[in-house]
Length: 436
Ligand SMILES: [Fe+2]
Ligand SMILES: [Fe+2]
Image 1 (tube, rainbow, N blue to C red):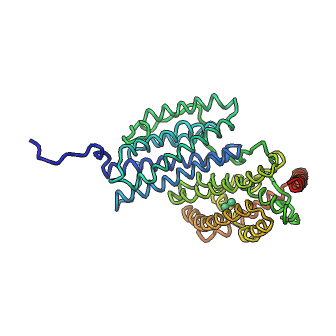
Image 2: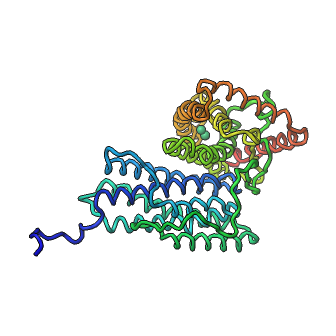
Image 3: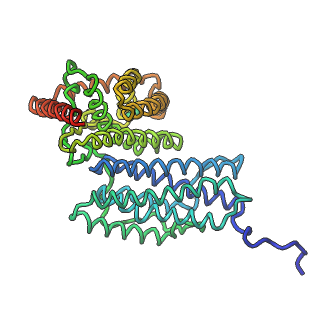
């Protein structure tokens, strides 16, 4: 006869502490992979809404990964190892989604296969757990489910707009094959996935390569340069109405920073690790918000996208450069004008344009954070590459030279086109202002 014991409360019989830690560690790795895939495809999608949806999904995945990692550390104290363990095959399938046949296909897979798989796993976890034993996990997992649902919906909408009819069939077949592979190793959940060995072949995919030329939204006036002051230092930034317009165009054209933050996340995360992932995802999300600030203001004023220039010369200047140079480019060129933002914000306030002022103020706060990221991670990236961390000024100087070279290569024809477009836009802005 068994030793006598008081009965178990059935609803609280699941998920013991160490099993919980193993499950949460698996989820953390899946979130890390999803953040990386979302970032990797930002420069590969054309539409600004697609870039913004991927950036937001990346940031949500990274913030949940951070909470999961912290919780694993708490549950396994003092053990701080995060080895993949029994999830190796499952992670290999998920990570293989980076090799999508195209940007629309990657978004489709995230929206219809990968995010729902992890969301369902979170939902099962919430059902199996209870807030007396494991309240700290549930406090972030509920919001993570809501974030997944919002991202699935935003990415589905973005996919519908981004996908061309020629891409559709291949994207559907490839995502279907990915789903079947994931089912074969055991869907993401509370149980340990199967180990299926190293072979993995998802037909229809294409080995991922970081785009050297970012995809651009063809509704806009797509050009390398986006304003005459990019190549003509005598062109004034402007005051009054011209400052309002230039600030919005400037925000929209942070699209290069969105693409750059995305590629450095994907390229440097394997070398710099979890803490870099968290900062880079926030960096990416912030730049996508800055881009959207400009987009919204220009739309609100009634400009058509075709009247508005959308450039990429700073991204292009980094062609074939390593990711450390891209990181330096983002650190330097995005924070270069930080000192002017206070004055510009005050001038916008004086004009009564509280929307632009508010955008500028929030942007200023973000850029102050990014300056810290740049200082920290540029040194760290040099250190892990076996270079002197204090050699960062040389890397920044090289970036300045690369941009100067790209500017010097501008043709008269492209300069004339951008100048004509800027003049027309300023003219239109005067008409909008007098009509209002
Ligand atoms: Fe920015
Ligand atoms: Fe920035």
